[in-house]
Amino acid sequence: MNLYRTVRLIRRFEERAVEFVRSGEIVGGIHPYIGQEAIAAGVCAPLTDTDVITSTHRGHGHVLARGADPARLLAELMGRETGLNKGRGGSMHAADFGLGILGANAIVGAAGSIATGAAWAHRRLGRDTVAATFFGDGAMNEGMLLEAFNLAALWQVPVIFVCENNGYATTMPVASAVAGSITARAEAFGIPAVTVDGQDPEKVLEATTVAVERARSGQGPTFLECTTYRFDAHHTFEHRARLTYRSTEEISAGRSRDPVEIQGARLAAEDRAVVDAEVEALLDAAAVIALGSAHPDPAAALEFLYASPEVLR
Amino acid sequence: MPKLSYLKALNRALGDELERDPTVFVLGEDIRAAASNVTAGLFARFGPDRVLDTPLSEQAFTNFATGAALAGMRPVIEFQIPSLLFLVFEQIANQAHKFSLMTGGQCKVPVTYVVPGSGSRTGWAGQHSDHPYTLFAHVGVKTVVPATPADAYGLLISAIRDDDPVVFFAPSGALGVRDDVDFSTLAPVPLGVGRVVRGGDDVTVVALGHLVQDALAAADELAGLGISVEVFDPRTVYPLDVEGLAASAAKTRRLVVIDDSNRTSGFAAEILAIAAERFDLDAPPRRVTRPDGAVLPFALALDRAVQPGRDQLVTAIHAVLEEQ
Ligand SMILES: Cc1ncc(C[n+]2csc(CCOP(=O)(O)OP(=O)(O)O)c2C)c(N)n1
Ligand SMILES: [Mg+2]
Image 1 (tube, rainbow over the protein chains, first blue to last red):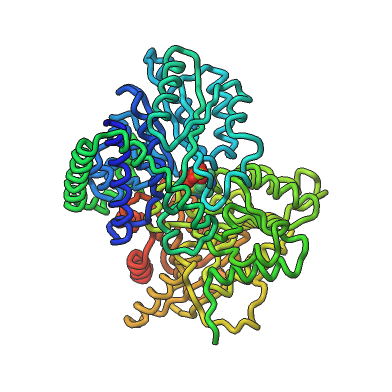
Image 2: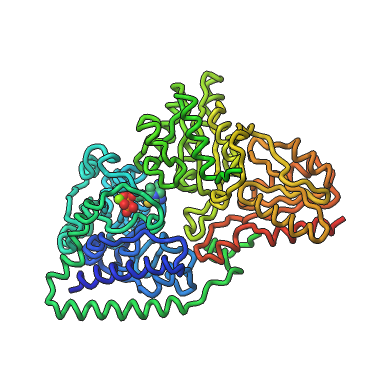
């Protein structure tokens, strides 16, 4: 029931966000998470309040699954003062430190080492925090991420590496980009790695539960390769650009395994309807709040630049 | 006359050089599908050995280009976002740039780094909106920021043919510029040579890239008030056309710089330092820049507030004209 609510919430949030991009309320576009919802839902479900996550350019799902307020996320995408980041971050940087969301990161491969450092430090400070860090198949080719695997394994850091393999890095197919196998790369550092059906929230949850236990009990990192498919564009700019790197047959085959349907089928129809209605009401309210929120004052454009107040020129 | 867009000019320059010189090749992310449109049609024309779609491995493919250059090729790298230059600063500043001197001149590294869409991209926020040309000028890497389609074409050709590493910034605010261009006049534009875009007598405005349009608009506006503004576009940030700038400043004796980089140690700071050392001006020069340490905030009004703009430029021009 909870997993269904999460995947449904993410799906409908994203569909509405795409509409807000079209209507111009969201400037700069978004990277829709549509199709990949099971991963965020399954990974975040077994985490506890004191755990932390890092997210990606395609991050709305992670942030929502971790429990962020949809109204404040939407307000962030609209650049409003009530947004998670007070309108300063936007789609690619949504963060909620109160929920252990250390931020979405717009640099592919950058967050894995941040999560590793955070997890290591929490442990040093005597906490039993686990970090989960999301990244795509494209990030598997960034040296910085591979270096993070080494540190995490070497120092037995309680971090879970979650690779969302949706088959593409923008237009680049994974087969043309990754030599060898994705899981073998983690295994080369001595990190246990499994491939999981990333369309099924329960499968993801199961695998994550094992990884969380390992991390929490001091056995170090785990690597999860979650196979998935991005149903929509890499970024909403693609709705206008003519990029032909996926065939229509491939797209419809990919869409046939829909995480919302897979999880929804496990619910009685009436229960599902109740959740759906609740999600719509929540998102209706979120839109009202976000659209009604103030825009930040341009005079405060560089507020927060430094943690300590500084004189700026 | 036919129209040529800035973006198309880049595409044309790449195609022409690939055609002319078999050692030229292009590499980068999503360039086969031409996600940015810079490489549109080139994969079909030149094939996978000349147009290499790379995995997301910027640090490796930047040094890979250095290696290919050492072996006698002329690589052109397209970077998808300006911030990637921070990721490969080591590979450009500490490797490619240093080989010639460190080897006592035994080799050359003719790599061109093209950054289409530098600066604010309207809504792409903190990690996608930098315009770091000053950084490369500071370390002494040849750096160009063309303003017009013809200059984009001509400077890209020269950058590719140059025997040293050259960083080529195509500001996102300039990519859509379209000019009437007689294609037969398209020609290489030498590095290090600026251009007086609009002649004037009262004040020199130095502007680069997309800000040249703002400078011209400000000049138009002020012409209505009887103020004659000269707009000087250095086109190359490093090496700078100091003589061209000096000639303009000697004529107008007043100077304002508009610069889309941070204030401290920015490009404008360098121009003002040169002015202090060499120019005889009637009023202290002024600069309009991003504020110190600027991180572009996401919300549109904040993003705009942090960028140097036409209104600030007009104010600065009035200020240097009023001072004696
Ligand atoms: C280091 C870096 N290189 C390139 C980019 C531009 N870029 C943004 S997303 C993306 C593709 C990422 O692919 P993947 O990691 O598979 O994630 P997906 O988009 O498929 O979710 C690229 C190339 C970037 N943001 N950072
Ligand atoms: Mg991917």
